[in-house]
Length: 166
Image (cartoon, rainbow, N blue to C red; front, side, top):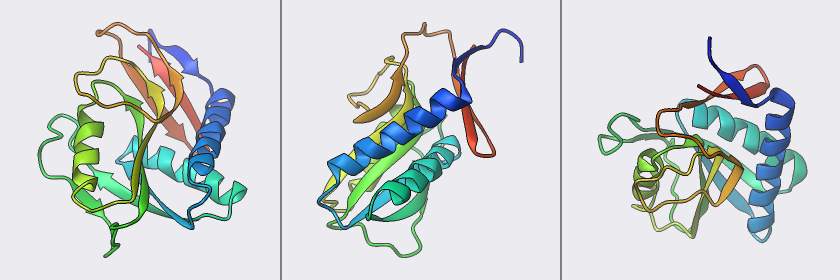
């Protein structure tokens, strides 16, 4: 694709994802279980990689769930593939690839808070700092100062991830 700048190459992205996993584990070190909820599609792919790292570095029992949010209309119906999982009293981390305006993430958090969760955190690989909603990433791989016209995209291929600015 023309006119793209790599902002996270695969090796750097891998290190950032490992660091995100460590930060999540450090903040949940006293927990016995953790639910990692990825926002489809790219956020879910990132959540899978984070979960793989957490299970490699910690004794935490982790479960991965997928949250489907319409990024063009995040207030529309949200669907979670929870397989009967009960989140009351549980700790959750909601994961997305890029935090743009904050609309997708805030509606995802709102949806999860319909349960009486013990703790809810957010994690993103790239935070663009162009929020229109009062939400932040508790854990982030990198913060980018970009113009509103620029677009950040994270692409996952096999085990690698690359972030581009266009």
